[in-house]
Structure formats: structure tokens, C-alpha cells
Image 1 (cartoon, rainbow, N blue to C red):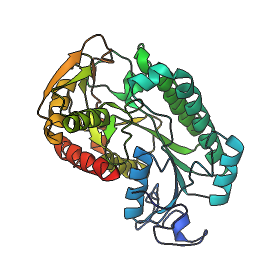
Image 2: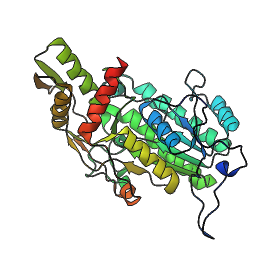
Image 3: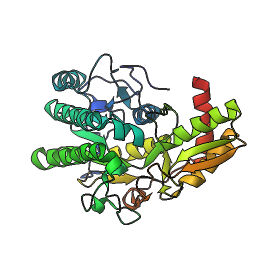
Image 4: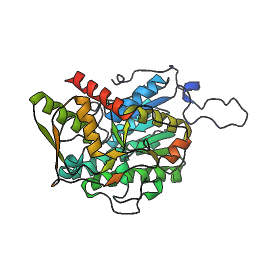
Length: 341
């Protein structure tokens, strides 16, 4: 599903040619595109859910995608990361690499969720600057916003209240990434930007029940219950929290749009503008999987944030609209996962 390492997937051109320099404008005095056609883009985290989707989309649109596997480069290693970026000389970097997980993983392993993400961000952003990379997209998370932020959550809600305790270390690391992007813009004039996606799902997701997010966890739970002939699946919490879900391929389209057209310090929310209860999501997944039993709720378990719906006004003004309906996306994700078994 992901591009092979170092494969030139767009129009090939050596450095110094049009593919790696601002494209000439068709109108005198018009601004050069922020991401020229055929530009070389390094995707950090290309094996993950987000990075693989972004790499696919960039390749489909004619960009030259560059990557490195984790076995060849630990992005927490600042010196090696800088050396790689100096050697690759990309026109842009997409920072999609991160340690991610659901409520249980965040609650159990707060130290790596904080420290690994800080190290990755510091390494890639500083390395990109040192290597002269002028364009960078940092991908954060909607968990950066306060637990009780007004809904829908605008970008201006950042740092206006306490975070959700169950993922606070991860959220703080992502907030630090936003601050780092802003700092490079302010001090060095770099065209670095941040995007804050809502809950994502799709091909490439993690289905390990110890580390997965809610949607893939539901898919696996119902699938195994159907396989085992169970009469009921008991889920965490009350089912009443509301969440927004975006297919990762829609996120990838938004990322390419932002790389081409957005250049401001304010992070951009990326979502669909609609939410539903976890109970409604569970019912949809139950139907897609074909599990005939019931659903129970363990209210002794945490619900997390009561509601998390992003205000996507800023993104929609750029012309973005999601294309993949939730049920269709769940069906495709379930089929993909079954093919991996």
C-alpha cells in the first residue's frame, strides 16, 4: 500500500531544474506555487496510517516521494535525520511520524508518548531547517484542544483550558510541535505549517487491541465476536461521547491542498464537520461486520472527552470537502484488514 523506499514516483528531474525550483508564474507578478509540480517531498512516517496515505496521494499527483524505513533511520536521532535530509535535499517535508495509540496505550505508557514524539519533532523540524528545506507540514492531533472546549472546536481554542487527562502527554508533545513550527516561521521565515486532523481511520490502521484507536478496535472486537459465536460485545464507557471520523485518504487530499495553498502560522483543523455518538458508531460497525449479537457498555471504564467536533471553516474555505462517507469507509477498512490476516 505504500511507495517503495527512494522510488521516484513523479516526473524525474535533477536538482536545479524546474521540478526543484519555484515554477514560473503564468502571470507577471503572481506568486509562485508553495509546492511546485513534480517537487521532491520527503514523507516521515510513511509506513503509518497517515504517512502511507499522504505518500500515495503525493505520488498519484505527480510528486517525487522520498522515504526511509525505521530500520534505516531512527527519526529520534537528530544527527542522522539532518544528514539524511541534507543528502535527499527535498523541496518539502511531511512530518507524519509519531507514536500513537488509544486511551489504554496513552494511560499505560505516558513517557514514550511524550518523549518519543518530542524527539521526533525536534529532530525532523531542526533537521529540515538545517538542510534548507523551505516547506514543511507538521501533522498534529485534535487532542491538543481543551477537554471542554466549545463545540465545534476552532483553532483559537488552543491553550484555553485543561486537556483530557488520558492523553495529556501526547497532546503536550503535539502542542510543542505547533510551537516549534511557529518559531521557525517567526525566527527564520520558514514556510512551515501545521494541520490538526480529527479521528482518522482507513487502510494501514493498527488493529492491535492494546494500542489501536476506537474504530479499528471496534472492527476487531465485532469480527472476533462473530467468529467465536459470542452473544454480546461489551465496550468501554457509556457510548454517549460524540466523535468525528475522517477517512485517511480524505486527510491525504487535504494535506496536499495545504502544501499547495496554505502558509500561515495558525494550525488548520482537518475533519468532515460532522460527528456521531460512539454507540451509533458501534452499531454501524456491528452491521458492517455482520455480528448478530448485542452490545453492552462497561461504564466503569473512562469515556474520555465528552465531545470532539472540529470547526473546519478554515479548511473548507480553501475548497476542501470530504469524499468518503463513513459507512463506505468502514466497509473498505474492514475488507482491507481481512485481506491482511
